[in-house]
Amino acid sequence: MTNRLLSEVIFPGFQNSWLEQNHDGAVLEISEARLAFTADSYVVEPRFFPGGDIGSLAVNGTVNDLAMCGARPKFLSCSFILEEGYAMEELTRVVQSMRAAADRAGVSIVTGDTKVVDRGSGDGLFVNTAGIGVIEHRLKISPQSIQPGDAILLSGDLGRHGITILAEREGLEFESSIESDCAPLWDVVDALLEANIEVRCLRDLTRGGLATVLKEVADDSTFQLRVEEEKIPVSDGVRGACEMLGLDPFFVANEGTMIAIVPGDQVAAALAAMRAIPEAANSVQIGQVEEETNQRVILRSILGTDRVLDRLPGEQLPRIC
View 1 (tube, rainbow, N blue to C red):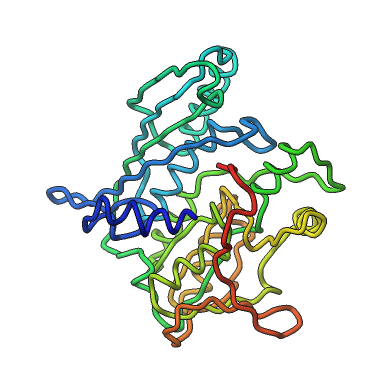
View 2 (view 1 turned 30 degrees about the horizontal axis):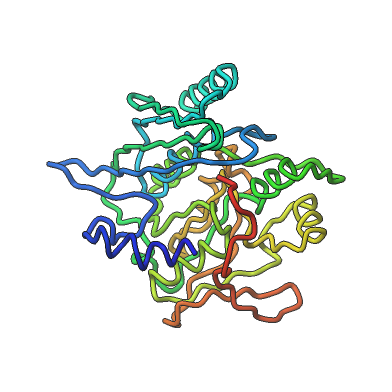
């Protein structure tokens, strides 16, 4: 539904060269500076969950969108839409969480807005953020830059944010505790750049999870991507929860995990750089870019069979960010 909304309404309605980049943010050149600019809105329910809350999610999500453009995050805006009667104590808690997340990510929240809507016409609290980052290199980090033979790297295990939200929302308890991976990713990207890795493409695994992100990259690059199931980490807790609930972990979202596509001959150096950062300590190579120009994503199963990964017709888990 989101993809259809973008392709049929948003892109035609606002058509311009920056929007056509179809990235996590717009890459802009102003005078001699290269900047990335992004915006997002957060409506998660519940607003507080193991590993984070709507405030830290808003900051980290915006920081990560800038990081996926290869930009050092610098400044954020923050706007609140509050429903009449929303508890001031809870808003204070959200603001304090946002400040802590911003400090951790090295960004400043420098402007914003607040609106109050009538009781019953909102959902307690909506948060809107925008961010500006500085691109300090000349790489073109986008799906159009990937080439056959490139390696697909994954910074962590799948599905922890989506399963955490579902468990909290529905009051579910699992044998293993599961906590959202909500975290900033700029340090991981910066480590790759500092190691002189020729980063081709970056994507964080938010709405739609790994499978959807890979399909988006394949569509925009024209190449086929192949990944191996046995190399893709899924924790026992997330795997068990997905089996019990009939969910596919390849489509469950993360909020602090990313893929990086890099040249095949730079895999060892790239993994070493990523693993030096706590948020990406368990980074692995999960696949590669192939020469076929069919825009497909192929998953080689543990049993040795091939399965095509495509977008789901709808959302597995609504309102997770």
